[in-house]
Amino acid sequence: MGVTTVHWTRLDSPLGPLLLTADPDGALTSLSMGGQKGGREVGGVEDGWRHDPEFFRDAEEQLGAYFAGELEEFRLPLRAHGTAFRERVWDALDSVPYGATVSYGEIAARIGAPRAAVRAVGGAIGANPLLVLRPCHRVVGADGTLTGYAGGLERKRRLLGLEGVLESSPSSPGA
Image (cartoon, rainbow, N blue to C red; front, side, top):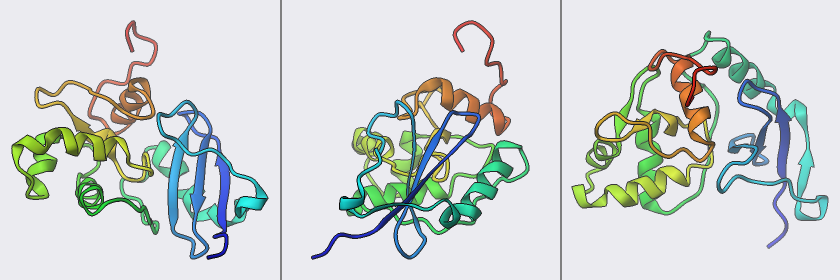
């Protein structure tokens, strides 16, 4: 089996630099942020990594419109690989609309998992390789509290503030 080409670029955003990767077919395979738990790092040419900003023009335009408050739903091809369970959870994330939140228990119910599977659902959400594009930031605790986010809780607050779910107050204490 040969080396698969990974196209990549970095984009500036209000959340800091974003690293985007895509497969040779143009489907996005990851969106990572600096300091992200489990985020991707750029590999070398020998590993099939190819810097190709033009490959990501649609993603750049849509992310820019999203951060400007002008886009509520991404229309980009996404391809993340995980276990069958993780992929069911990630598919459920795709159905959470802009400006809404759901609990981990609600995601478990959407995929037909028992209540006891909430921890596993949380693990699958935490392993989401497509931050922002696949809206794991819209998942909150059962009591509505903000809980873990691989990109950090401050970024989660900012995304939910942008979507009108929270008061956006980046300069307030504790934010």
